[in-house]
Image (cartoon, rainbow, N blue to C red; front, side, top):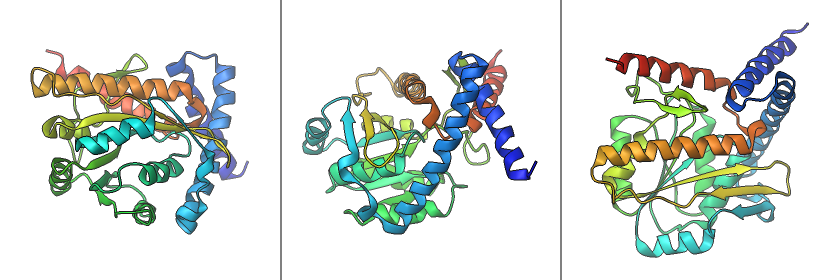
Length: 281
């Protein structure tokens, strides 16, 4: 069997195993879903390359359906309030097109910045350059201390911070944080954006994109939560981390075949379990 087919078969088995363990589905169902997930991944990369090539003109704006709280009302009120916003997003569905839609219809007169993984593909910079063609440029930040200072400054000026939160932590850059349960297993999720939200008084929101194809994409928003009422910062961080994990789990369970990071779930679980064991007296 040629290597590409062997590699796809091994990846399909790994994804099916994680799906079965996380979602409690029979192996036969998980295997079928895993095949659909790999097909979605291939479609995603085709769409991604097309967006890099064409930018905003390649987006079908009428393909989006907004779910959750009334987006234009809620975020219009947010724009008028001047409150900063930290918006968390998983790698689900056609999230690249979703980012363009958010940037087009969110308050564009405010500073915008986004975190990326330091080891992320070089195309990420091109993507956010394309995103900036819709309005103000987007400051693309890595996970260094200087980047955190920039993000803090952006939020203090009432800005908006995008951050993906569904990948293992790079322990060479940031320490493993206390684990949270993801599908009933301790998992390590990055909490830097949450700590920035707590430190700056920003609202914390969650958004994900589901659906595929050129005509129907669904952007689902959570109600942003306000952490300023918590008694202290550490309590606020703990509340927000549990909320983030619950939102992520719900989003994955809603669109299991569209989550691109199934192959990384094992590492997230491993990091969380190691941290839990090291924290046990």
